[in-house]
Length: 487
Image (cartoon, rainbow, N blue to C red; front, side, top):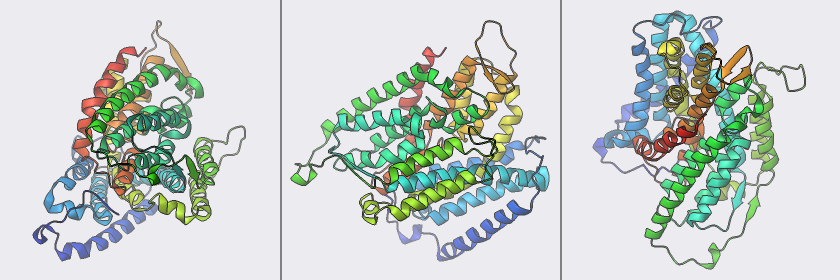
């Protein structure tokens, strides 16, 4: 994988040959051990949060350590070169997973390990990667050529389309379809990273709050009885946040565009709007339909038929296979398609999903005792934790906390499965989970995927903390301003 962060280091900075040789051995042995534990450990009826020990903070350290590795290793010259190998990333990811499971095993026994592994792998990682992989392959076979050459209004139009599309084909779907046209538009631009950052803000996150299929947290709410059309009531917040972000982007891009020394355009740059690989359009629609209609443990809409386990994942992989078979190789070549980016996401997120099980268990055990009751507290707590944990289970935890609050006569309530929930709290939880998933590269799956694709295209993206400087400096103040219009 071509990585713009990759640099030539002196020989003394490179890891020794022994470390290079043992990395594959560690990866194979650790993977085999995890798979064996997944299949042989009991997992029925025991949750890791049932008896939270006082030393729970020790079990959180592997997750914190993995986040620190993602953030810091690319910045340390002595190991930056080593870190840029997906195999070495996987070794670190598996090490964090092993330490987290070791703590769970000591405190909760084999059933705790089994429960954590089954939550992390078949219930979360497999559906997550199946969707990302399918959309990555399908969108990678769809080439959208435009006459754009990076003018601010042209880039703005792509982000605006993405803000709308994210709610209707999902943030992941919109991101995978539109990131390459944006990169193509900017191919002669000097400053490009800011456009990708705002793309992550808008298309990968904030645009997806109008329908349950827009972002996984909202879909979890729909499965718990929130009416399908309720999220359309969030249109004011959607309009304000995305509108402010688009205005901020246009101002920044206009300033940077004016600073650049543009080369004289030659005739071959006068492209026209053109789509290649159109066979992938119905495949993309089918993938979105599979996600919306095939839900594990739920009957197909309008029927009593409950699909067997992993039916959705198999459907997505079949659609990805069809895309690979029926798309001309020249289209993927023109898109500079390669599997390095999706492999990078997989090796990082397998460790995140496993090592975050204990932090999620702590949140679920201690959430009701946090004493939060106002919509503003729910908004910021849900958002802050969604920035680093998976925003879907974080949404569920605070959703369940909000359900337990006593009903007040002057408040508006939304009827859900098994009860009622205050509408202002539901709004706050929904927006916090969706909007603030943009605060970090790992807050939402498409974020890291888009970063990897951009780097493959030669864009030098900021580090983990560098990206957070943008989100804290621009996104968070805008989200605080938008909070003023909440009901």
